[in-house]
Amino acid sequence: MKIEIALLDNAPAPLETPGSRQDVDTPWGERRRVKLKVTDEDSFGLIADRAVGEFQASNSEEIAAFEAGFHLGFHRAGDETAKQAYRCPEVPVVQPDGRAFWKRDFRVARYGDLLEASRLGLFPGDPRRVYLIRDAPYAGGPAPDWAALLSGVAVLHELLASKARAEGSIAFGDELRVRVDHARSSLKAASPALEERGARPASFRDSLGSGPWTVADLTALLGIPDDQVDGLLTAFGFAAVDGGLWHPRADAESELLSDLHSEIELCYAGEGARSPEKRLRERLRKYLASGKRPALPEDVEPAQHRIRSREDELVVGAGNGSSDLAAQMTPNRSR
Image (cartoon, rainbow, N blue to C red; front, side, top):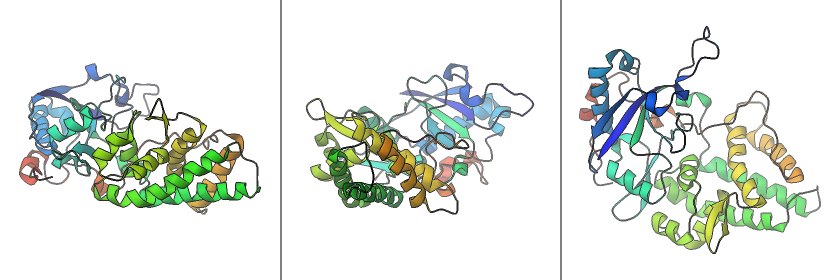
């Protein structure tokens, strides 16, 4: 199979050129690209190493800017630019036994296992169009982990309990409380297994995408009980419609649970005097009263998924030379 790899320099445009097009705005067809023939057994470490070699031969000056390190991303269908590129550090793969894992180092993910995940709907990017990205994805702060997600769900659970005691008005009925109870218990039960498989909330949410899913399909992929899968879908903002098919944001309750993830990221990523739980509680109280997500603070832009730490970023070339990547990495064939 042939794939294309493009360069993406996500550094800001110079201040002296206001209004100029950022590199992230450049359409895929206008980018510097190389084509590679790959097999299912190839690791992305070897693929990245080959791509760097091709760029060094054809665009040596441009690839020189990437020598300090880069990570991988994937183009998304429907977006000609790179604004919506998949950048989560974990890449979902489906192994020969049919189980899903999220590789926290792209370098050890096999191309064929990523293709299988894409075929089954677990990967939102295009495996045939890959980016080498030079930027600092960790600059925005760490993405919430499972503990932060459980903490945020607990805040919502407590608020709903207080509303049930008539301690404030609410724009939602009892259905939301039922769903939050189920979501909370399912997250507590299933998150250790998902963590062991390499998933984090942001990458798991990206893998679920826009569905639709059946509980049976996800049960087969995740290897956890049906009732926990049902609760996970609920926790990530899905609702059952169309005879058992689960769709995201299908009603007011699922919209709130979907928005909860963005609210947790907003409140838990900041560093201020107030605790993240207090900040989240204040915003969720407004949400529950109005039925609409509160406006973002003026100094905050809509958040994108952030890499948890420098160690989780797929950085190659930094300090050791990208041409040595193939020697450094051994494809994980046992998975």
